[in-house]
Amino acid sequence: MSNISKKLQERWLLQKIAVKKDADAFATIYDSYIDQIYRFIYFKVGNSTEAEDLTSTVFLNLWKYLTDTKKKNIESVSGLIYTIARRLVVDLYRERAKTTYTSIEEADPFTPEEITEKISTQQDTDRLLQHMKQLKQEYQEVLHLKYLDELSTAEIANVLGKTTTNVRVLLHRATKKLQDLMGQ
Image 1 (cartoon, rainbow, N blue to C red):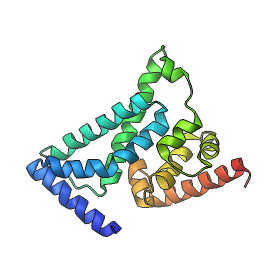
Image 2 (image 1 turned 90 degrees about the horizontal axis):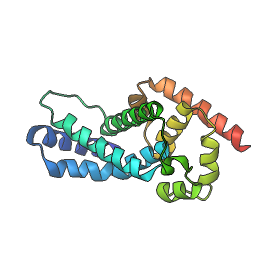
Image 3 (image 1 turned 60 degrees about the vertical axis):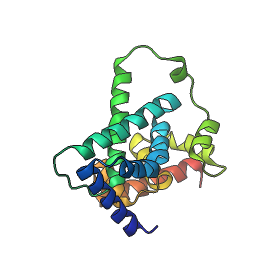
Image 4 (image 1 turned 120 degrees about the vertical axis):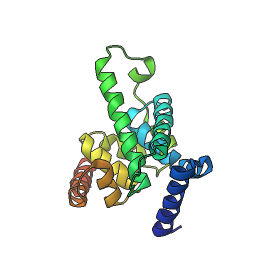
């Protein structure tokens, strides 16, 4: 499906959700984004249980937002979903910072094999992710959105609240830094 027809279909689905609170239309959007959002969150939190909970919360918040009676102009469904997910992850980090206890699951670092299984990328994923974790958070996020979730520069700009020029610069710097770390 071309990018234009996908956007048209999403706009049509959004209209059905807003006007009729159409659960089937929402299910179509859910099915389109569930795996990407889970991967995005899992990569950030490193815990499958928390990632599942946050992913559910993302879609619950999305439903509430879309069915609210106020008229909304949504530029990008993916941008909206990633923004909700990103905010929930930030909230989780804030909560973690407030608590002094750590569960056993959180204390054990996740293995590259677990990430590879969830992300389903090429053989060098574990090496790549080890190097990505050495990058600052902003670089990790922009690389993840661009190359793992395959968002456009405009969609990334929407998610991060930056201009497309800023995103291009971030992508260039993050890619260069990652290449340096990997010795390429």
